Length: 253
Image 1 (cartoon, rainbow, N blue to C red):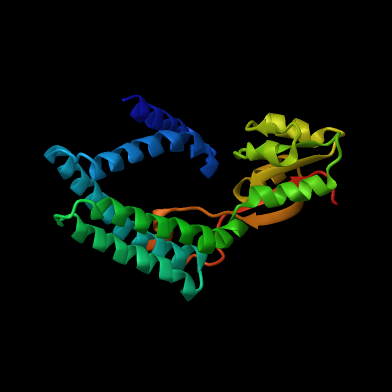
Image 2 (spheres, rainbow, N blue to C red):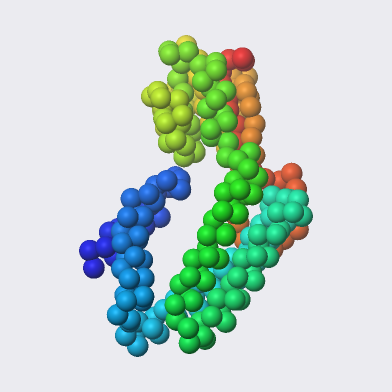
C-alpha cells in the first residue's frame, strides 16, 4: 500500500500542475520499479493466484486497447496537427498492431508472455517517441527558444516575465527573477516604466495590450505553440492556424 500511495500521490500532484514536464514524474519510478520487480519475481517463482491471473489478463487487455486507440489518435495528430512526413506514420502502425497482439495475448494461457509482450510494445513506443517525435515537436515548444533570445539581449536591470500565460520554466532557462502578471493594470505599469522589459504573451492577448498601450508594444519574435484539441483532430487540417506565442518589449532590439 505504501508504494501504491507513493505512486498515486506523485501522479495526482503532477496532473494538477498547470505546467507539466516529463521529468516531474521521476520520483514515481523507484516505487513503480519495486512493484513491477516484485510481480515478476512471483510470476517466475512461486506463481500467482487465480485472482492475480485474472488481473494480469485484464491489465493486458486494457493496455492493448489503450495502445490501439492511442495509435489511432497519434496518427490523426501527425496528419492534422503536425502535418508530419509519411515516414513518421510507421510507429503508429507498429503500436496499433502491437495493441491488437496484446488483445490476443490476453486470451492466452501462457501468462508469462503477457507482461513481456506489453513491455516490449511499450518500449518500442517510448523509443520511437524519443527518436522520431521529439525532433518534430521541439519547434512547437516556444518557451525555451524565446528564452534564448531574451538571454542574448536582456540586461540585468531589465524586467523579464509573462502576461496571462504560464511559463515558470523561464526561471530555469534564464536563472533570473521572473515576473508573472495577470492583471491589466499591472502590465500597464510594467510597460510604462523606464526599464526595458521582455514579456511572453499569447498572440490572442496582443490586441488588448495594443489597445491599452498604443505605440508602446514591439514584437520581437513569434513562435507556434502545439495544442492538443479534439476539434483539431476531427476537423480539416489546420495548416497555419496553430496558436502563436509572442515575445514583446517596449524597445526594439
